[in-house]
Image 1 (cartoon, rainbow, N blue to C red):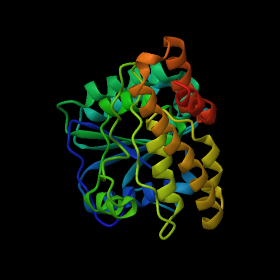
Image 2 (cartoon, rainbow, N blue to C red):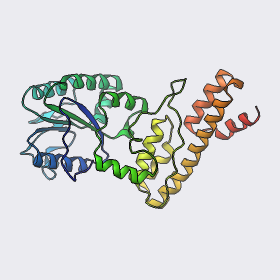
Image 3 (cartoon, helix red, strand yellow):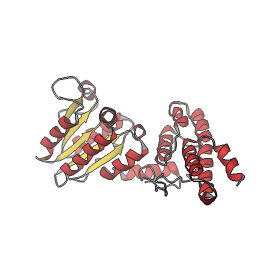
Length: 290
């Protein structure tokens, strides 16, 4: 999320936005409130006392999502949230930002939350409102995210695309948000990504790479502690996992090339282990013995 300039969200549509730092989201909201005539509604897990230091609450209608009862509080109940949103979108024009999907999915489950999001998409259609759903994509499964993005396409800011292009080199700027292709078994296709250079390596870039891996169905939990390490330690751990991933991609390609020589159970077991990044040496030995 960037705060360099105001951006108009297309009316009548639902959007998503990866946000790992609420401060950047609040900065963007504050800029929008100062730069547009849209009415802005912000529903979040952040108490009002903190918002007072970040945004002009006289220009943004804020609600604290909490189990506590109080003025301008709203329960994390999907029916209550839906009723409140409906009461806004049938009048005037504006933007509704609903933060806290990570909490809502833990309370209601992926299926119920996705159905709720589909309802919001239908509700906002043909209105003068936009709905933005910020979220930390690492909190969700890759399969759910792919379905979610079909209902709420990623909101991409042009200069943000340019930043991603610089960070990831030859990889396309849309790579972090485009669902991967699936193979015959319905599994995400494994793709060989460019290795990230040590020069310019940051936690932001690492997080994008983790998301790319996760969307391919890979279990890369081993590298996630690097998000809290210094740059040198983080890069060393990233490099270790990168080699495992590259080996996994090569092994999957070899399995596909020799699948007629493997039993159905061997294929299924091998592909599962590849995505878990476990038993790679054993899989290589099996392929070499064919």
